Length: 551
Image (cartoon, rainbow, N blue to C red; front, side, top):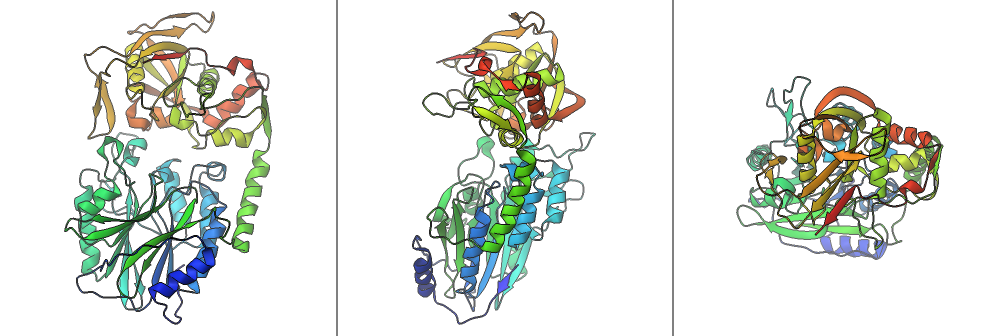
């Protein structure tokens, strides 16, 4: 809710000195960034409290509220915004498909919100359910209906602060369109994130809000400041290719940017800021009475940030509700299932790991498919030695994917595996952990994979020497392996994210789903543990040589 608290106007220095005394851990930078040619300055200080990429780190919300309450005692106007990726990434979100997170956000009271790619993890229909439930202005300047060319959500929201209007625009990463196919059952595209027209569309929206009288323009972006895989637009590009934005509050890359200035299309400095992820920090952007726009980050781990008791109680009640439901023990593990190597390096995205074998085996067991795969990015937590609870499994698979089966030829499988290892020695989310097969990889061979940058998909395997060799398929009756038959058709089990939504750049897009949705990935795992007699035993202590990589 927008707080228009009119008290004695504090100047910039007093505001930040007072806040330093309260927090003892803040850094502040400023720049004379006059936002409009008319030099219209606010009659009182405007503070925008923001978060990005919270990913279900729910204990941070009570601290955000406490910080906002402090600002309401200092500044004239306070607004609370989010730059997306709040609905998934943890048990509270995954257990409720984001709905309990929205309940918490409604308790906090957000004014303006834009969407991150993970708001679409539960499907487009559920995304709409969440935004309908959210008591905030949802803005997205680049999410459009393909049939009508209308914005699905308002492209912007204008807030009046005394003598000035501030427009809040929203931008969602265009890579979302490759991880969730916005199509109906007949293959017709329903929505677009306007990748090819992104910057021109942004300028059009900026011009529109300026024409409506907005003296300041704040972009709530979920784009990332770094160069994006596949050439997707980022926040630096948004600034470089437009004029009229005063500040970009960014998310997606989990970058920690207290204050950075980027030249816009006209060479004028534009503020860029981002607060990391998982409530490492809460950000604050200040539009001051002299026209300067500046930002600061508050370290929530510093131990100096207070907690709002009422909000924390609400969060604790939600967590207790989730924990009681999720404390059910589904089995026991005698081994540590991990995504790391012995040196503590994350390697699930570049080599075989025991937890990948376990998950892929579970999918194959549940469906009876010939083979199964899971992308490295779909495994989000480890399984420790000891009792395994439903919450443990949910933390490992928080995205509520469903297990799907498909047909795939031996040649298509060989191509998909070639896609999977094309980035080695670098890791990639699309790296496939496998079941029912084994193969060798020579990463010293230049990858022959052709990647379609414009559409952000794996296109095909070129004519060069392949990295993958000695691909073999297991006989489920004997346990023996035999060479793959490139002309044969196999049944493949995986998650709908890969087989239906063409996630991870369409690595499995050439497989043909059979329309069978078996169960959720979480239920497949719990079923498999039960089938193992309730015990994950020593067979998973080490990797088996399913993927042998040499450099």
